[in-house]
Length: 107
Image (cartoon, rainbow, N blue to C red; front, side, top):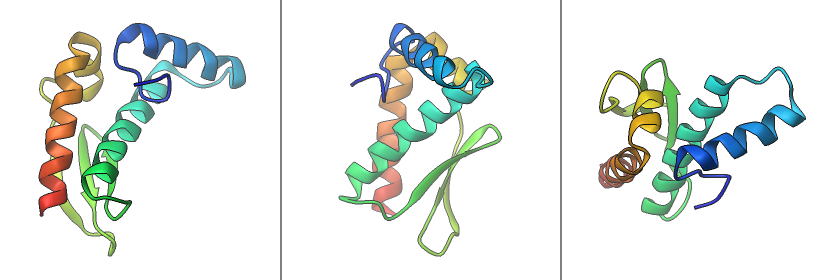
C-alpha cells in the first residue's frame, strides 16, 4: 500500500517516526490503532463504492456504524487484540479486515 496504509511493521515504524516528528506526544499505540481503523475504513469504502458506513475501533473491537449511527456489525480481533494481530501477522490481519469490510458492505 503506502505509508498511509502500512503493509508490514517496517512501513508502520516509518509512519510512526514521521508522526512522532510532527507530534512528539503521539504514542505508538495511538498510531497503530489509527492505522488499523483507517485501513479498515479504506476497505469498507472500496467495498461500498463510497463512504456510507463508518468503521471505528472501539475498545478491542471494530464496530461498523450506518448512516443513522447504529452499530450494524462488530468485528473481533483474530487473537488478543488488533494491535497484536498487526504485529504478529500483518498480511493475515489485512486479509481479515478486507474480508470483514466486504461482509459489512453486503449487509
